[in-house]
Image 1: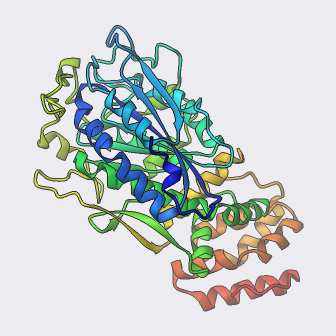
Image 2: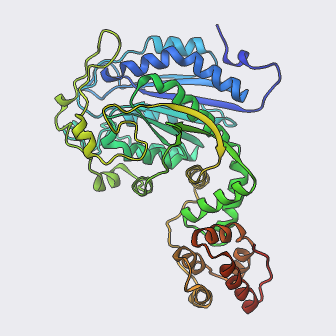
Length: 451
């Protein structure tokens, strides 16, 4: 039996990784299961070679709820250090059945939450799927109110985030495009990301890239958490401001990270819709505001669950005309019939999108995330300070309006260097902003150096 940890050099490394795969094992997923099976050794070898890390693997298979599927809802294989054991699980994993369009996504996520995660490990879940969960307004859904087992996938993902488990959702497109924002919001909650995939052959590269990128972000968590906590204690709660400040501070330090690239471009940052959905606390709340962006799968028979002789799917996918009616993102995997999908991994200067994800990791793990637009406790402070910046960026006015005490005033002004630099870049008036800041210092007797 080959042990993953035997593949490392003899030098002992403290980094540890628990990597769980959550896989849709219904009939349309045959080519993806086969690709993971063939590539599992390559995936592990690449991660260990680049990071010299102690790694364990787990597999959670899921299909659908009865009566749509009678074989199983979930099948769980807890963590192992053996690649041979993982391959054995995958050898016994077949893509059959399914029923209606939605599947047991909620149950799969819930089983992953219950795995034997190590407390000191970097924890990553990779969800590979081409269909939504029950209960998000999918036409023909047998369980329109959600899992018949009462499992709420949004509540489960909140718990994943609190346990420092990062979720990457790999969306097999074009089938998953109508539900992309849902899966993007799940990943965003945990500091992970949605990765579009149209070709099963790219799966190994996507998995390795996602893992290496997340490991590089986890190494920054201690410094980022300290910075965010300092700013929040000073009254800054706007997550976009926090992310920009984190990006600015890390770039000042020359920080670089591993990044997964699609056609040599970084993956898109989270959309405003994704961020809005990520703040919803339950499936009921999500269902109230969400409608799939296509009517292609209006009945269960629109997505037959048959298995090809080569292990590939016979599933009908939406016509290109339908997919093109869904406004594609800048690097959505399928934007035309002849689109080429090439994934790679590179080391680059940290991006704003990664800074956003770091902020989400900190806020959701420590359970300190709060609604935006913090209430001002002292109206006189708001009036006193905003008047000196009435011609400046609205984000800055909001920032100043959050001052609640003189103590907060001092703390904020003493820790504002990264924010001032961000703002000066944004409005192109560095010297003017500096002078206004000096006026504020002189008027209120606060001694500080900002730029």
